[in-house]
Length: 483
Image (tube, rainbow, N blue to C red; front, side):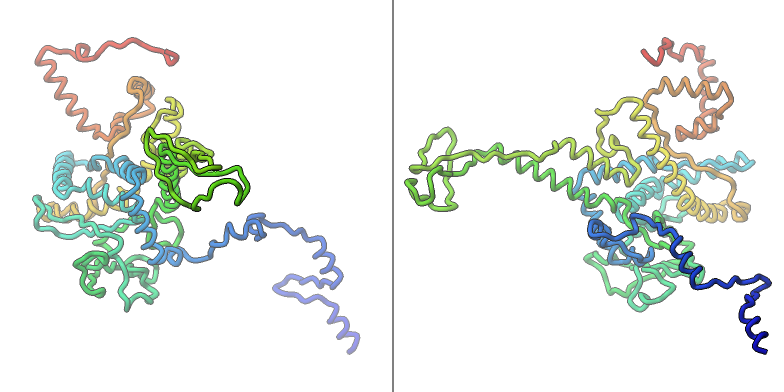
């Protein structure tokens, strides 16, 4: 029995068909000595970097962007946009480049008559509700407020057959009531289902900062299909947005402080100010002078100093870096968080050549295209679906209710710096069949079908008047790139 028990104790246990090895204490110590201890330098906390990452936290996306934090960031971002010329220009430029004069709809169904009627009626409705202006306002709100809200609601005062409207709501009005603030399915005005999808939005009927606001419980509930909520989601699980210019807010303040400091130094240099000093010892032969006393100096006048005292003008010194260099560097850092090149943010391209300008604009144009695609999918497609429902009822074309027909959106194109080179490259691409007319017209923000129909009308009229296309084409000389 003893021998059997001893044999059983030495036999390794079998778990799941695999033999578990029995390691002695000496083997474990040897393995621990051979183990390599490695890590990341940035994860180490030393007395050198302790203050640098003192504010780093492990909060969730919604906890980090709490209502109080977002309210503070919104107020500061709005203040900078209202009082800082560069901040206002950057936000306006971004909205104008992203939206431009507004999107244009092109239907891609097999029925040309239906395509033309829908495009014409939608354009008339967009002008009636001022859709381009509202899209620009929503783009500016994303920059300075972090998010934009718009309600799809009926408006009987629209001068169009389709009376659906896009009513903008400021981010301050979307908030939770006190009795719902601890609800686990609600995130500051957003009611979520078990899967995290927005179900409804709680919107205050009056702005909390308005003079005519009523009680804090005066809210209305807007269902999610009728609310358009757009923001840049930087983290998974984030349900509310923060201003896109948040990283640049301290830089805007530093820019204003530096400007005031340089202005104060210039004013001190322009004014004649000085200080009295003496080379004699304290309580020596120099006459007594009242400490910290002020002496008024008149222009074009000579004056005598007390005995034993001299006057020296205060020398105002500028900071180590020049004003232009500081502004250039800080504006470049400000515009980086928006993927905007320096010359667009500063409105100055004096230090650029053609190649550097084109290179810097590539990242900016790609960012604009991404932003336009985001607006088309999150805003315009939903607006079109709601508009088609009303339009289908009015025209009794209920086929539009089954599935939205194929379509695409055109935006304003960007003008080329050298139109002659771009036209030559465009002709080469068309000749080599590496592009299409639809793509080339789309780059200019135009509908290729409408452009070709217009061009055909022009050619017919020119033939009637006895003109030829060669007469209308200016003759230009071929120039090389070096020239």
